[in-house]
Amino acid sequence: MKKGYLIFLIVIVVFSCSEKKEANSINPENWAKRKATINEKDSLEIGKSYLSIYSQIYSLTEDTKHNLTAMASMRNTSTVDTIFVLKAQYFDTHGKVVRTYFEEPIYLAPMETTEIIIDEIDISGGTGSNFIFEWKIPKNCPEPLFEGVMSSTMGQQGLSFTTQAKRIK
Image 1 (cartoon, one colour):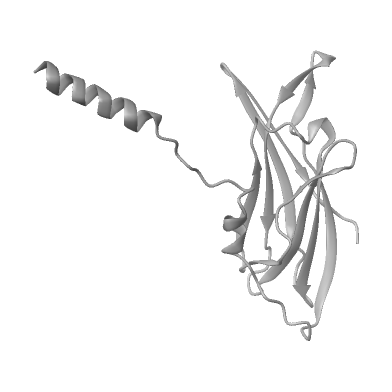
Image 2 (tube, helix red, strand yellow; image 1 turned 90 degrees about the horizontal axis):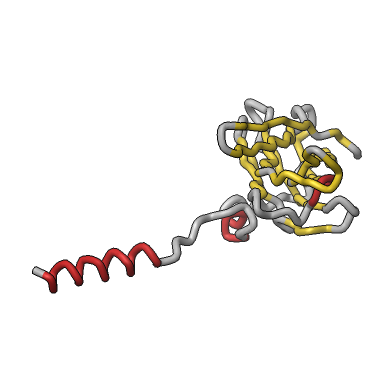
């Protein structure tokens, strides 16, 4: 009986210590699944959008910061056309590139949405982080919508707010 109990405990410990690999928005394999090839002969309109994101906000004083989970939502608002996001660059408070999520175009099917998630523990962007999205759409297609959703919970308190991108080019 004791031997069976010991084996059971060892099995539980081994399986509980195994590292689970979860997909995240930094993993390039996730974006490779959305990779798109754009024919340069296609007459696509090019654009660029700026989105403010907050991975941290000030709390009580300028010396105290509160970390947030941030989601950059990329939405195709067309009911008929596929659109392409060429690049998604994440910048920190000082304007330095933190990371580029994909260098090759990805597609969004009609009415499709995909997200970039910045984990609450990732404070590399700071209080004034932002994204630049470069995109291409067919003529007469509605522009893509880029939104930021920031949230956090501590105890019984919850905090969330949103931002919307602005076309800059």
